[in-house]
Length: 230
Image (cartoon, rainbow, N blue to C red; front, side, top):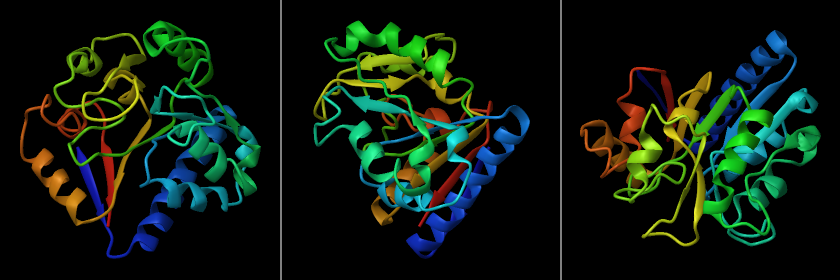
């Protein structure tokens, strides 16, 4: 089920989404002593990273990872890891432990199994996963009409990660698969702006997942997805 949370202003959205994420992490810590939070890259989550980092919380009990990574050195300006380290792993959240996907000296294809094993051993089970959405309807690094998209979206695929080279964006990528993402105890989609709202509505009212991969998550019946947008 898609549960929509619409806000007039970005600040209201960030406050509500931050509170929801913290509540989910607290519930996980209360149950098992630790929690796993997976976040997305790009520009949209940067203000959320800042808001989370400034929230007093038991961050020392949280492991943070990524839904996907651009296969570049973590010091590269396009690295999702760089963004998380600079904007999220600071202030109160500096106590959290980050587990990245990038493997130095290996191509994305070579590192696919390594990344799957790393996610399984260090970021599993997933308590909170926050997805983003591109203007083309991609999410994580599951891009429309990519030769490996169907493999990435196959719910029977037991691999947690898949190496993908997008035709419409720079850099090879490592992405979590549909089966990995949908396993999250709490699943969120976060986007902002009128253009993204139109993309979301188009995705919601169509069923071609190859054209808009986000549809795979909006139309599945395995897990509720909480959609936060302004």
